[in-house]
Image (cartoon, rainbow, N blue to C red; front, side, top):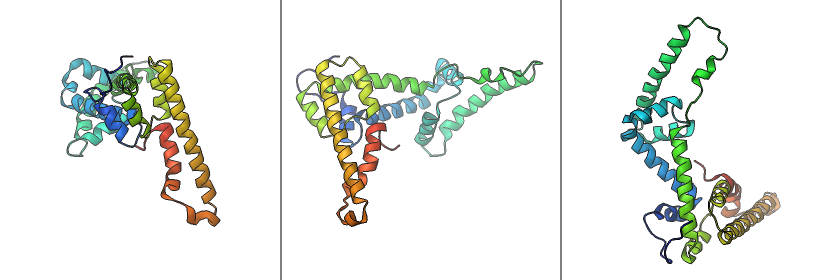
Length: 228
């Protein structure tokens, strides 16, 4: 892991991480979502014209459900034109396979294999690569005192991204810091849930606060990230 120089952690590589820390959600969820939206926009505007990129798209059967609908949502006129254009080409590609299969005299066992994905969703591949980059940037950010101070005031990492960061070249000091911080957070969430449960009794309902009401959604977000 490469530490950032000195204690000034604001640079081109950490802007998304800092914005994520200020967002009120898992900083990696935020930064990766922002980056994948940029990638999908770039793919729609330019990448889809590349024959290798188009071939990977076809061989993957298009994007996975999440990234297909995300591209749909990014369509400028909200009509889904981006998806219509790409998936219209995919229809033509798949019709060649359908016509070929129907034109053969053959047994039908094993037909499904012709429609299996031969490539991963390109956006999923990009998202996995982005996670590795952003995790490295976050570790550099946390290697500084000011970075840790900002992180401790944030929502912190969701569980899956905590694991991803620990899987990187995380030194023992930062691993201990992250685990201790996450343990503190989930212990507080456990306490809040217990308080919410107590106040569900009508005898204590008048004591219930907005923070109590958020406890259920907060604990889910802490494990799987913010609601999409």
